[in-house]
Image: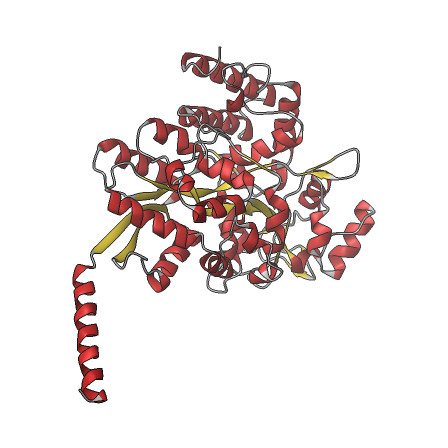
Length: 472
């Protein structure tokens, strides 16, 4: 056989082999329920562009984008209906207990224990993320989730306003200290100074602001104070922990009590502190509708000087297509109480979500879902996600020297992770959440004082958790 004939023959064999392989490849769709916001849109784009299943199957991610305000109800309805619509879901951390106990979320310990690559990944994740996104009972060694989009609360502020020469001079004259301008200066801000920002930057339409008449009413500060979902408790919890108080601690069940803890004098003081700053916010706060979306909208419209917001909203704030202040925004760490040693106590409620696998999947779908999660958490994809506006919980990624250059808020990411705590993971979380949200809303809208609010929450939680066997 000549060399040419031999090569043609080998090419024919290869073609047959490839055709046989292609014939055996399956078309598989991983249907995933996800909240509709930038991090999940980025995930879908990356999956479309880059994902190739190691099995050789033609695996496609199909994200079902559901609006955040309706997401829990829609996902819960699907899971409990028996329709088995989703192979995977992006789950808020506090849902783990309810959906694990309901039999819908798959335990993943066996896959981690039998795979050195998974062990390497989990050892590389920040422990606060593992505790919040993976464990049930909370902080146990029972794992159910993989981080999809870790998230924390940070500061967004108008650099053109804070750094303007006229505002700097006027602030110094009024308060006797420098108005922070750089991110590093803003990192050193405590709640007392946040109050001064609120007072100082309240301007009526037409009053001078950064050297020009304000084209609308302008407000000093904003943070979460909405009645829907968890849109006030996420910020209230930060004040509670920073003041040395606590929410009901599920890790101490059944000995841990609600009454005497949830309504401690320190907790009441924390809520009073939270409420005292609402006067410096846009008037929508008085209606109980200052949620994360309204904040985001008002800040992008140029109506707020200083805002505490999830890092996951940063992308829309720096986009010229969606933000009037895209070139006038800077970022800093979440504020806190200054301790006796001069350092700031920054405890905050963690945001973000894990992936979970549902329990009705076939072995093949489970393996394809795990392969997708492993791909998502690979350094290459985590780095690309961060470059497009997401965040990585892997130390080997976020400790890269260039990580802080990917997005202007990334400098705040690593320092924030050590200060994260989480709300409850127990199956009764939704009842706890709804009642707390309603009680806090009564305080926010002026219907009752802080002590009454905390007493009502403590009494409800004591009764509910006792009936559930979580308090003795």
